Image (cartoon, rainbow, N blue to C red; front, side, top):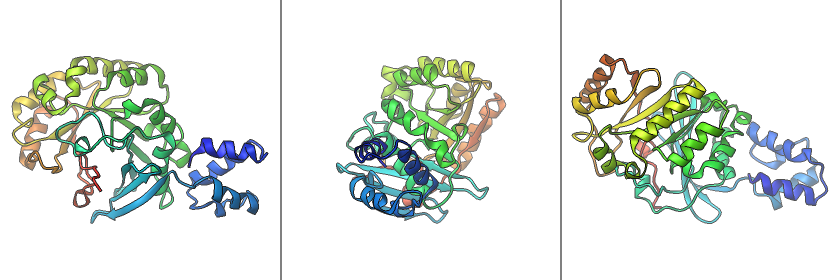
Length: 326
């Protein structure tokens, strides 16, 4: 819902300022239409349905995985595709993967989104409407900004959306923003954001040359500078940074690569998530045995590490698979 349009429309109708808050509270609670907002007059509900679209996004397709993961392809009012994912876990977690952009201009070679034509940044309302679509289905408790796009290239809109997530039942401590190391946004996040939102960093290779092959952004913002900024976040916020590391067979999964990663990090500041590669056409994923051997090197170096559970792979909803050419 475009809350700015809502506020203007209500003001033009001479409605008191608290009406916008009433509408938002109903929306964040998970109602599916204005008709359910019984604290508003019937005439106002009818008028709002005609003048302020209930969502800024149109649902194009919705697919459910065998493991319960749901992926939705949305389209913005000006025609840009956006995908978001709901991941359901047996322990009751309901985690959303939200997109910050339609496509991504940073062209990481292992990521399907990077192969898309870049559309544009999403507004805060378009990001929230991804979450609200799933909130209307069931309660939610976690969000990761790890869908399409680089969140820190859309800093203001991403943070504006994140600040409203507690209204949907998702606390800041259960919200994570992932970056490839876009330094202008990362520095703003460290300096300006006092909410306890978590930070994740995509590394994928400790060797600078190899990382630049996989992630061209490394040429612009070298990993050493990015890690220094992450350590500043840890010092100020007293919260570890999650390190994302996708496992690519014969590319970044050797024992030497594991030792290099361990030498780069410290246990006080970082926790590593090893991500089994989800096929997008260019690389092969590391075997389970190779991933366990890689993790064993990190374990011996006392670097906290886990192997991420793959969700939604059969519907192309897993990490690195979000892309739409439809």
